[in-house]
Image 1 (spheres, rainbow, N blue to C red):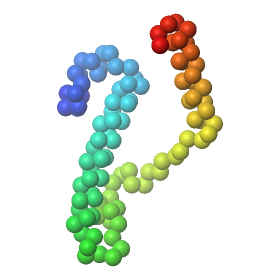
Image 2 (image 1 turned 30 degrees about the vertical axis):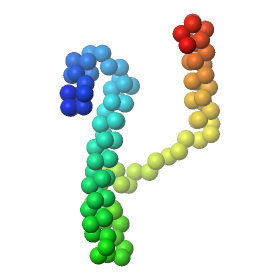
Image 3 (image 1 turned 45 degrees about the vertical axis):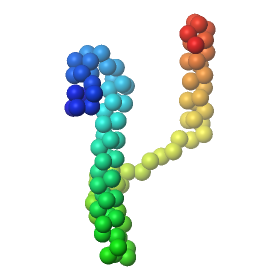
Image 4 (image 1 turned 30 degrees about the horizontal axis):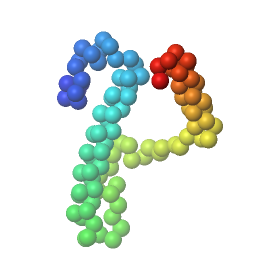
Length: 97
């Protein structure tokens, strides 16, 4: 999995931090989803002219179809901004802009 996605297995196992590994694996999953969504849309576009009420999810169903994305609240966004500002200030303090 790692080699096919541009990462050496030893680097993945020994040097990657857990949050980096999670981001890497999420990226692989997102690319896979995008490829399957493209396949579903191609099939849908092929079948749509012959159906009135056809939806892409009628052509192919995926496990992630039922997932709902939640948006960040204003408070959460502000917390992230404050955290980022704090980190930036620490870098500026140490002369690493």
